[in-house]
Amino acid sequence: MEQIMQTSFDPVLFNKRAFVKAVGAALATTIVLPAVAAENTGSIKMDFNPGQIKAIVFDTVGTLLDTYGSITRKGAAFTESLGIQVDWVQLLDQWRAEWRKLTDEIAQGKSPWRSADFVYREALDKTLVSYEWGTRLNAADRDQLNYLWYQIDPWADTKPGLERLKNRFTLSTLSNGSMASLVQMIKSADLPFDCILTAELVKSAKPDPKVYALAANSLNLRPEQILMVAAHKYDLEAAKKFGFSVGFLPRPLEYGPRGKVDIGPEAYFDLMQPDLVRMAQALGA
Image (cartoon, rainbow, N blue to C red):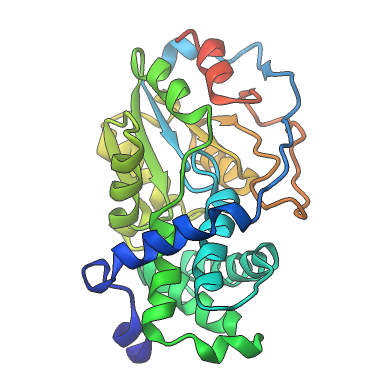
């Protein structure tokens, strides 16, 4: 942990201007993910009453923000600026798998809590061990790569969907991401949230029930007055067990073009819509 703390990322120390320049220079040759549409159908349970919902809480990274499209594009720009050719889809698959394993250990109480920024950096170091070129990346280079988790762009339907929902509901994040990263990404994309909640406020991670309790307590609402929206079924299953209503927002490319994504319906879903605009319509917003 001490070593991680010494090399953990500090945005103030980064040469962001050089990083942005590298991204721009490589855009023409970076990875372009193929378009894959979600099923063009939606559903809503007969006994689900949108009228009882006062607030909607959102998983953010992957659900509202295009993780693979953003990180593979910007990551390729950075490594190419160093003369390193990388299969960024494969690298990100490995990086996220390591992050998931470390995060699950935190949620289960098997490992001490660390901010998502530290966990992503720890996972990156573990991932790079399997690459020969990994030794060419010094601490500053790795910090630059970790900073990609502060630069994830929203899906095309995210902002218009949120703008419709804001007219009727209180909107909040409920993310495993760090507070600092969420503040930056939401501000950069001008997303209309009323509140930003992250698991780090209770020093845990989803699917720990403490994270869902954070939302109910912070918004001063009963669980049944809250709708959780996510692209991840483990998140929705845990939220449903806590007492929230749940809405599934499938993202077929959430795990990249080679990923296998389960976008089928589940009995416990209260609603499922192929994009956030149509989810807003289904909720009467």
